[in-house]
Image (spheres, rainbow, N blue to C red):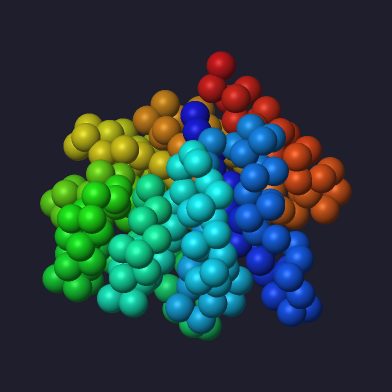
Length: 240
């Protein structure tokens, strides 16, 4: 299973003091050297963490897979066309949220999302849609001819250790199975930690995990190298 590290919150720390450190690009390279397979970054419309210059620098530095998360807007699609990440992941975005909440409403966005998807696909970049583990949304994603979906694992993460944990885990398993049956590449992410990742990593249909906040938090106690290696160990252990 591939592990992509989201380095947004390295930029969050940098921006808190208006300094030039810590450098998200340097962090990305440390992650890759420590066992990560790729790097994810979210260029939000309000630029609260990752900024345009970071995206360009990351594209130049990351020689494995660079996944750029963004809202489905003309501005963001134009940036993707300039920078040309390996994967563009369209995510929902609201200014008042702390982090991405819920998945895209693929059906509700209709032609506006389709136009963004088509532009990115025409530029020869893989398109991924960040969606809830819902069969209707998955089918709608397939109808847009995207290559990949990312299942939102936030509800499972919130339920972990609670009575409804199994229900949320089963939803993800059913969604992953359904998506794979449609020929979609299946990845997952949001709220995953060393404690809760094993059940998701054990789902054979899921080929990749995107994990950020937990790794950066762990890095405060065990170094960034140690945090990536520890997450890698937990994921690999669940796949054996």
